[in-house]
Length: 410
Image 1: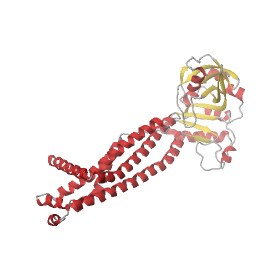
Image 2: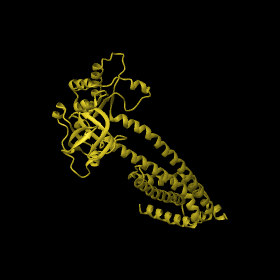
Image 3: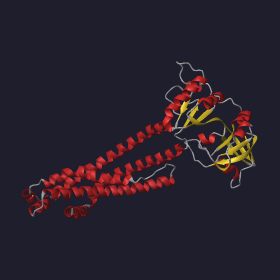
Image 4: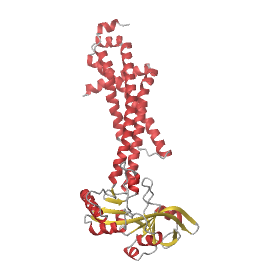
């Protein structure tokens, strides 16, 4: 093992001497590697940042929650008019699911509208108003940071109470305590009984810009001429498909669909959005691999070319080394180490540039970007594999030189 490290150190010293003797050639040779590594790392980092941001956003949807609605989250190419002309879901469907679904732990209906919300002189326009029940806290993982959530009595007696999203409370009340105050929702007075925990945006929907009211109160004030969305919390995630089948049967029965009729409702879940996202990012991965591969191929060809030139220039040196006892393996190892060093320096410079750019992108742009630890391992792999692949031919050519002919070379 000690002989191996001695040979390695000797090869590194010879390689450094050769690189110092041809600085401009070395810079031009590594440029392709630098560009390739930088490009790949930046694209991969942005994709990884997008993945983390997506996972954070979608986590609040919940893998164990199903969403029954009029429209599917992901359209399958069917004409939009087909979905638009579907019958609205009503409280009848919600009551049927609540009564007959045995594989769920909670069911919550939701009616939605957008209205102006006002407190004193502060008004917020186009705020999402949801009419729902006390089960919403379970199905939507929406828990109060202060105060309380809607109670069964609030829903039963159609009380004019509301729970505010974190951002609504902050904009209307600042640092003041909103609990107990009355606000105007669409021109009607509601008493604030709770404020939800801050959750952050989920795609284009911001659950912090939200006001929750009892569904009966919502219907009384804003009407019921809109489709009801039904959120269902599954008891056992392992029986998710069985739960979907049960819900489908209940919905088809209550909506009086015949055996040959298509479903006129959708049962949505988190995996639908995850699959769509993975399909979209697959294109980005293909671009990253394509661009990076071309850049690295160009850089590798440059290394091979320069190493062939180096072998030609150092033919006499190789002859002298062989004449004083150097074996083929010694010469082969010398040029392989040199090729790997060129690649290694190019990878290190590329990583440094890429990390700097990624940090600037993450700090000064809306694009999420994240450097993951395996990037360094990837860089090391590039160094070894690229140096070996593109250096093996020049190194083997040098190792096969006849010492007598090499000494005669001028």
